[in-house]
Image 1 (spheres, rainbow, N blue to C red):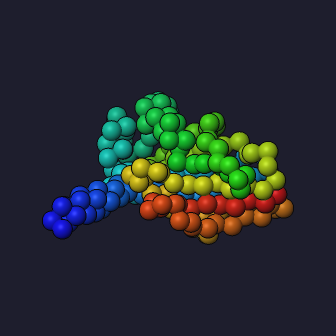
Image 2 (image 1 turned 180 degrees about the horizontal axis):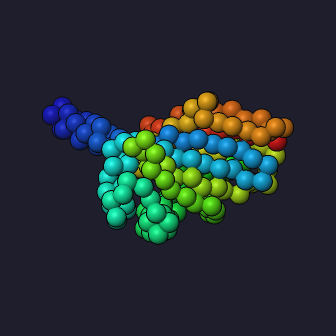
Image 3 (image 1 turned 120 degrees about the vertical axis):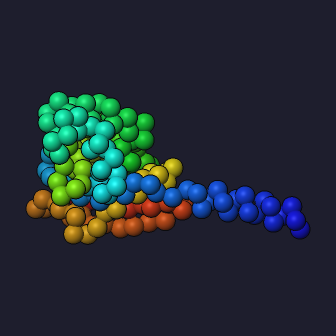
Length: 171
């Protein structure tokens, strides 16, 4: 009985230690030619990142600081597919290409804006999650915009103990 209690306590402590450290509000704009994502970091993460990347400490990101932030911070998320996964409803595909990256600092929050090419499917899902549970990407209905003729909706879903949202797109 004592051994079972020790094993249970170890498993519980591992589960409780896995929680998000970074919270990102995710806005999704589905356009005819691309999908634009806007990440708004929580204030604590924003302050730490700005302290690291706003080299001249003018509380804004200059073009050279944006370029360095893209290379040094944003592009390092490529192995995690930028926490964005596409699905045709059966298979899930990792995001491999990002275009039009920009970063800014607004109202004490770091904002990343970038675009991804649209998939070839007429119906698909964009799934937002971090399987390691360090980053929580939150998508709300009011943060979703779809161009005329494109139907979209936001859903949360059970993704084995981590935060997960998906946007279902029907063209």
